[in-house]
Image 1 (cartoon, helix red, strand yellow):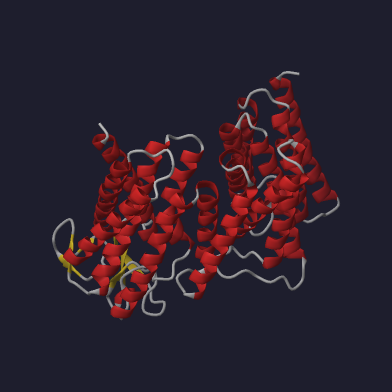
Image 2: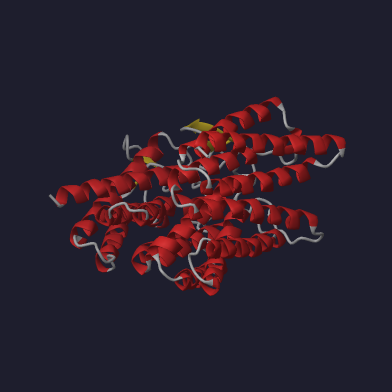
Length: 492
């Protein structure tokens, strides 16, 4: 049976599934929430088993792209109420199809990396919705978790563990005991990712996070016990950080995921630079807060970091680690990774030291005097702190370089230059395109979207989407690129 014939059957099956949901919803007056979940499970199972039938990735990926177009039009036109006429409204069906495209394009021809993640999305995500919404007295998760509940997250945990274990053994990747450990290692990741994902985005984040975790478990580390140990260490780390008020609950969840993947898949060399950055930066932020009673009026967020801050400072480094795990040359990935972390350290140390000591800053683009903490403002003492932060990450990278990295001195130098380059980029972006407001009540220039106990603010410059977190993420990318370029030059 050729792929074209199988593709036609798949399209027909999806059409039948959606048509049945419409008929059932209209004639039997079944609520849209139920018909949508039924479509979610049925279509999820269908696309999950498709890798076992197709010979080439382009057919299933093309089908998913076709349905993305159809679903976007249907949602815009208010068609297909059985899957779109639900509240809260979301693009969950589109995210679902996008996840299929990304998995087929990136994981082919390894069906285990496609089938198991899609089955987790079909079963675990549905279980979380049913338990979280149907059970009376469900305990809500803290703010920052997209309105999810502990009950729903526990359901995601349990069903993920079962689904992954059965799938792992069915593919012949290990015995029952080994499969159970793999499922147990995947379950916390799935529960945390699902809880953090708002408005249907879990339909793409959940299967992709499962695919990443399974890659680490199947191709990078040989024993799932290493991932389980990493999760225990990560849990201890984030509990301590939350108790010390260095992380908000959603930020703690983000750090848990990062530490699990980095420590479980890469060991201490990939984990320690970020841990040192986080601990020392939190200490500096706490000390800086105590020295600047009015500093919080200028900057957008305080020293208690949330999920977006965690992602902005560590996301680029994590992506580089994933690239190295998937085959990107280690000798290039390591200096780029260090450059991204060094940028975060350099920028944070420069900001906190400059603001804590309350030195008058000058705008990097014009030299105009600005209050300490103003985006794009630099001070001599703060710049010294930035150099120290980047240098420290370079030294750690030199000492803890993973096996296979030979040019450790070159990597450390690249980290220093990359960190300073990224910090410079952060200052330039902060002085030009980062959004800035003026409080309508007191006139203070600030990064906050509300000021003076909720008073409105007016935008005075910058792009609306370019807040401090976006600037940090872009700067981390610049730091990684500068470090990679520096490494290439000094290695000639």
